[in-house]
View: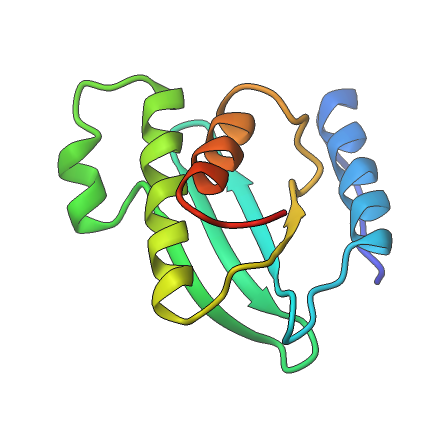
Length: 127
């Protein structure tokens, strides 16, 4: 996989992209054990379960979804990430997915990413 880094504004962003490339070299989702991808922006957080062999998204949850957006009003980022983790675990359970490979997407396993992962584990996903 090749990602063009190009002109970037900060060392922090280039570091994240380098970590992302390093993680994606090692992590691959199959049909038996798909990949749980976390995307974190400044305001929102998104999780997807992807089968890399077929290239399809099997399940997705985001803090922008209608049901979660209403629940997330007035809550902190970590609390919203916990809601998204619970929602992605429910979506995975409806598709009979129990085992996944966790892809943090170059983000540090801390804060919102960690909260999402732990709530998904509590809801029944194994990784």
